[in-house]
Length: 193
Image 1: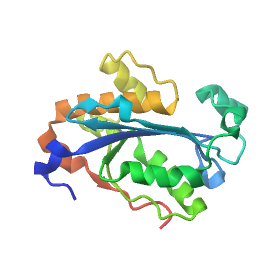
Image 2: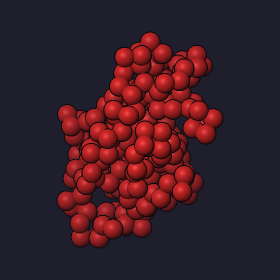
Image 3: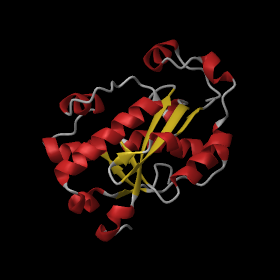
Image 4: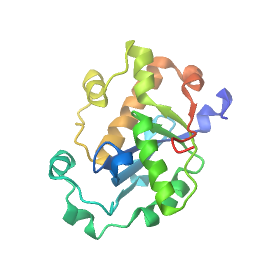
């Protein structure tokens, strides 16, 4: 576990996924993932990892209208079997930051199981939980973006939403204080245990 004295050198990483739906138990899968490092309060856009993923299942038309990722656009995308090892390698040594991390981490657990990889088990921070600390109730990413007057919109594309998550994280940490961040560090032990 990271001690309080290590925060200055910690590289955080905002992560967002787009999926074919909301329930991996019913066959929904990841179609896009983005990860973007945050170091010393700065978002390092040029070091971002972004990939479409061929989910090997059809993207429903209703969901396609939300994130504008079509079945055609993922047809030639790498499979999760190719992408998952890159995700693990990319996140190595970083603390992932999610908004509603259980959603993304559950999808990543299912992905790991399907491709025969060990699941990720990171220490992570959830801006959903941080927002509950600051605003007394958990808030949506869209609400937080408006509250912090961010010009970015939540458009349900992984990179854009990861950038918003990173910006919201930086704002929330300033309000909570780095010295208090340790109490929000969570260990993901998976849903498939």
